[in-house]
Every structure is written in structure tokens, then in C-alpha cells.
Length: 353
Image (cartoon, rainbow, N blue to C red; front, side, top):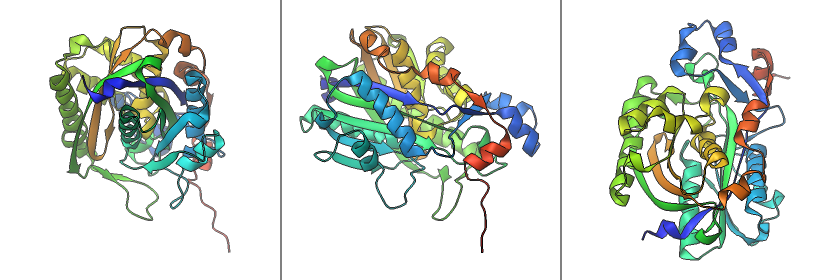
């Protein structure tokens, strides 16, 4: 028995903006080789509209999670919000969402920070609070309107979207946590200094020492802890900075492509940073059957990875149609050109005076 298995996911939800920018449009504007998006396995990405930010995206995802949970918002004793693109430098975003959903005032609320792993940090904190009995339900949200320096290769994938999960007692869960494992180091692969508009990255260094090293170690640690192997899992969901990395890390860990593809979303919506692996998990829960086991391994630069083993219960099927599914958001899209993308994401700045 592990503390995690007292808890489970009682509600989940995601949100992806409708606007899409095709990778070929970025190639047209910046003169990249046409082979670049193919090498990244990225077709297009989601773009937040001019009236959307990480908070509005997080609220949409959290509302969907509440619809599936079918609980009184006042029973949620903690709200965690993980993002790299919060709208206020000094003001919590978690309180905005909690207030808008009717959760306040008797609740904990905190913004989390660990690059793309911040939402997963909130998930681990939620598991601990529920397992200890401090709260009955806790909500974690991962959402971003990811930024990229115009003309940088990162612009092919940096996108907008988010996911939310409500953790509660195992007996109410659509899927329960079997165990978790975390592996972190100080690895400077991706960063943004104060007052910088866009993040910087260590190019190839972001791969082997950062992404692959941390995910592989967190997953192997989980395997050893729970005495499981890839054969014991029906699905595997990894952080998705592009479409190729999840397939490569899965292959190195012994997972066939067929177990990874159902949770892969990045080729069609881009890398939503804190929403990346979490939207993938939501997509898998949208289609999972009772008794199936899911591996989830988010990653955050800086660097660290969490690995979770999640077992689906008989409650999952009754909850799946209570809110919009991830695939419905993926399919509901309106294409825009680079000019509108630049306007919506604030790349064009007006100077007055």
C-alpha cells in the first residue's frame, strides 16, 4: 500500500483554443526548411485569442473538470495553478479561478512554478492533501499561452491550452493513483530571465541531459517502486515538447507506439507547456476502459519529471460524456495567418508618445 492509492481523479477537463497556425505558415514567414516541422512531427498549433490568457484557459478546463466531478465547488479545499505565462507578475492566478468557480473563501490557493512541470507539482500536492485527510477534494490546473521568440524553432510548437484535475477519495474516483515517483536535478536547459519577453533554451542540450534523462529516471524509479513493467500498462503519456520526443522516450523505456499515440496531442495543437502531458492524460481518460492502467510522466525544464501509475475504475464511463472531450477541441478549429497570430499573442507592440 502506498499513500497515493487512497486517492484518485474524480473529475478531469481540458480546453484548447479554436485558432490554429499551420507549421507551413511559420516556414513561409521565416524561411525555415520544409523538413523542420516534419522532423519535429508538428502539423499545426493552437493559438489563444486576443481575449484569452492562461487564467481564462485554466478556468475553462477547471469548469469541465467540475462538470465531471459533480461535486459542490465549496468542498474543494485546495486549488493549485501551474503556468509559465500567468497574466500578473505579482498576484495569484489560482484565486481568480477559485473565485470564478465559487470555491472561495474557505480554501487553499497557490500558484506553482517549475516550468512545464508546475501543474504536475500541483497534482502531487493534491494527492498528499487528500491522502492525509487535510482536504476532501483538491484541484490542480496546468495552463499556458506559451511564448517563443519570433523566428526561433520553438515557435513551431509553443502554443495555448490547459487541463485540470480534481483529486478526491479513491472510492469516488474514475481512476485511482497506484503510486508516484519524482526525479529532479539542477539542469539549466530552458530559462527566462526577469524582464525578458521570451525564453531561451539550450538547443540540443534540452534533449538528452534534460528531457530524456529525467523522464527515464522517474519512470524507472516508479517501475522499481511498484514492481511494474511496460507490459503492465495500456497507455503511456509523456511530456510533449514536440511530436517526436514522446515516441523516442517511450521506445527507450520499452513502450510500443500503439500505447503512446492515444495520448499524443502535440502534432495537432502544439506544446501547451503545463498543459502538454496533462491534456494527453485527459484525452486518454476520455477513451479509457475500466481496469486499464495509465503511465503519465510530465517534465519541466530546470529540470524534473514526475511519473504516475493510474488505474481506471468502473466510474470512468459514466463521467466521460459529462464534459467536452479533448478530441472535440482538437477538431474544432479555425485557421489564421501569421499576422493574426502575431496580433493575438502580442508579438506586435505599439509604441505611443
